[in-house]
Image (cartoon, rainbow, N blue to C red; front, side):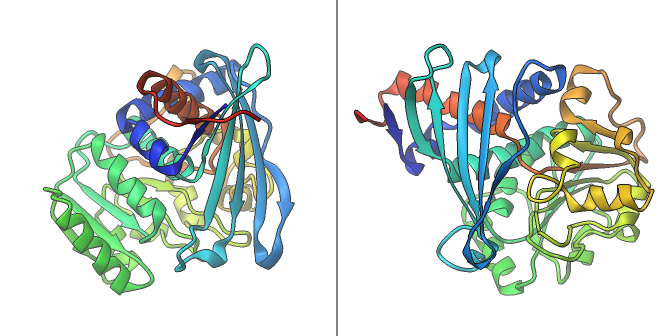
Length: 328
């Protein structure tokens, strides 16, 4: 089998190709062409969790399983909150063909999926991007989302302003040409923003409906066992609430999204009102209907995205000779 390190995965994943691969995988999932059970797993020590995420995406030639740990207490340490490994199998024989780092895949495909949601749901003239959070996913979204819209301003906000300042300096030193400012609060970042990316582990909303302008698009990728990143007012005002998979997003934690299940329990949202990104791509459900509509994409992270990313990595690894062959 081929063993691919995090450095290998980062070098082999092209961000634009990844958005297209995720789009195809989600379209296949919504059309019934891919197989993926809801995420399952077991709790670990200290509030941690080990998840198991298998998927079969025939169109990508991908049969994979991701093992991923979620340890929110790692935030602010040298260890990421999400750590993972992806095992790829030959779909025809079941043989193990590769084991690769899944931490980079998790980070990168999540940003790519938000970029995809932004591409199909945000206004074409979106100019102000707000990034809420200062960790791995904030960086992933900063790499991915500006590739699908021409932003004139990026606003950063975090619970720790010093970390937001450091991220702004990091961006500026990278040669980014878009002006970057640090907002003094989540509210200051969100107000008048056209696209909002919530990338936190906050148990309390970091996006509130009365902060949003008409026509705003919200991406939310953070997860918390008891809370959520946006309040009921965001759901109530949204013309479109999109997810990767209804079965996953409307389930219980850790597979599901508390923001949506809570809105359904309170009667603000019907299950049938929730659309899948793949349905919008294939045209079976509507996306944005006008410039004044608010749209929301709530990500819970699904296994077909990992399979699509792993397929890209494996294809390029074989073409370039990257990785180490190991006999089991």
